[in-house]
Image (cartoon, rainbow, N blue to C red; front, top):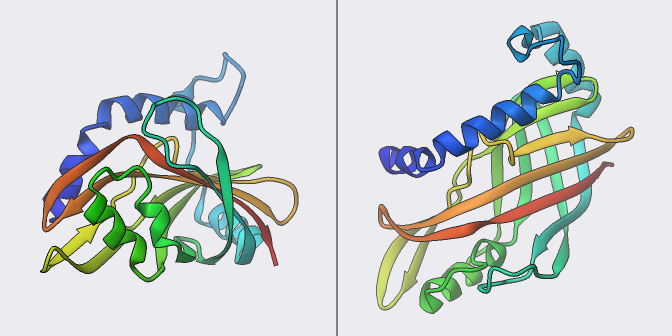
Length: 209
């Protein structure tokens, strides 16, 4: 299963690597005389200080696009959401609605089964990249469901893109946080069943409570 997830992520490796470097390294400096290879990772002390500024509980809105198979622009919708930053490597999305993970899934039976599953907490591994403003890489761990449909039990996984320029968190004004993650594919019993061509993009507009 681990090899499968790695394979899925490698499908976009070249594309995301270039964007990742441009986007994140580009945030370090807008000065052309300061090449990106001069970027210096945060020290342990800087990471600790950044964590102290963002740790705690958050409430806010999860913003997502309504289901859209046309490829054209669609309308956004929102749900209330709670999140936590518990340590300098962990961001937790509480009770993520499973029906949102089924958006744009074409297999109707599979879609219904995922939609009816209980909400899950999604744990994300984070890495502090910049401290003014605070910017973090966000890598969600894969939600996994044991579902029964078509008179059989199945293990369903919904991996997200990781180490990706589109998966990040950024501190706004004091106590505000913008987070974004992108669901990539649907895996059933170890096999990729559906790819989400546009990705299911989820944005979180959060405020520390």
